[in-house]
Length: 219
Image 1 (tube, rainbow, N blue to C red):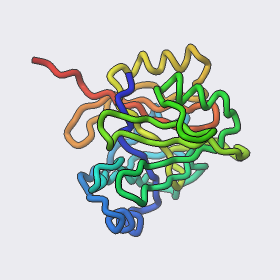
Image 2: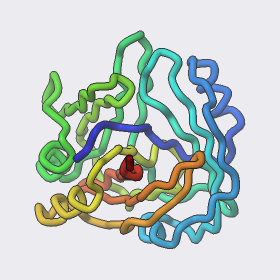
Image 3: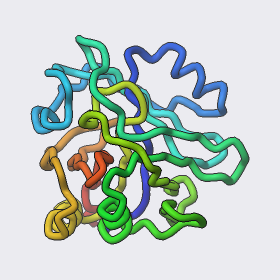
Image 4: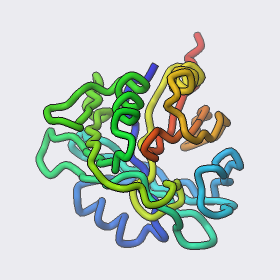
């Protein structure tokens, strides 16, 4: 079950001005991870072979959605980013991403039936309203040709990260509905001292998502 949206991921050649822009917009750096081994399961969703990456996680000071910057070692970013990102300008507004929806009906089902988003306030808009405001996001399906495959190592907003309590069941539901195009199957990774199960998947219009399943609490 998807609980909410944890973050959007923006891949860059280097952090520099991108990190400064987030700080100027009121974001605060929460943690940094260096030299993270690039898991081979991600290869189908990457344009180049990658050995490792760095990441910086930023939280919004107004309780909005977090932004994570990634930078892969080696060659510059390549391929096409899945989303156009629009950060909120007004307090209380939600972060918004746009998808060039070449398969509009499939994408609507992917976000809605597959991931729990609801219809928004206008045609082509969907939204996830979580119990916690910082886990909410708007998705806009816009007209536009799909020029090339989307990749997680492109320049720009490459991933929407979702928190789930049942990663395998979520993937099975998407697969059974015929809504998965490509998949990086689940693996385990340690981020900020927490061991997580991770998977990445592509929807019908090239939208790329990351599913994070934290460990179950034990008494």
